[in-house]
Image 1: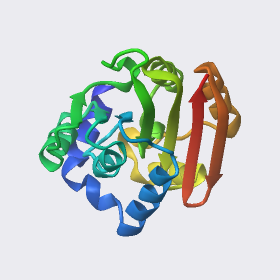
Image 2: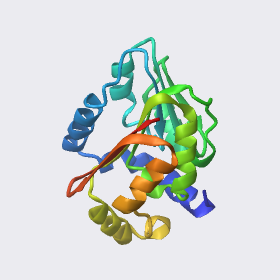
Image 3: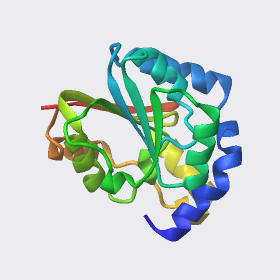
Length: 199
């Protein structure tokens, strides 16, 4: 990750949660409910930011499971630690292209409002595949369609001006590269959701 991008997200930490409405959180909760997360699951939240999914995920996995959030912006991680001091939630200052996580350890990996910002999608997909158990799932969520998101980032400018989601064909190829099966991609106004199961 480049320094400008890191600096940008460091500066966004205090205002980050204000980007999401109550309706956004309701949609996010509905999506997480659909992921069939069982009690005791191990979940990696990639690009976790301030931990907006932590409470939703920990309720799904229960006291016997764990949620590990990864983000490269230290100020985001610090806020997540303060906001969600749960004993089964762990925050890690790290890069999604070099995940400091064990191979084959996780049942689920989820990234919300972050995948478009990852620089090397292919390396990220390889890393996600590495940390998941066979049969583990990976879900990519944005609460905008790919075209909306691209326009939003252009308008935002700065280090994220050119951040965008891969095309349908390229996203399929990325999941296949990571040895995922049962790949599903929904891309429409108000939602982008791509999912796969590690083969």
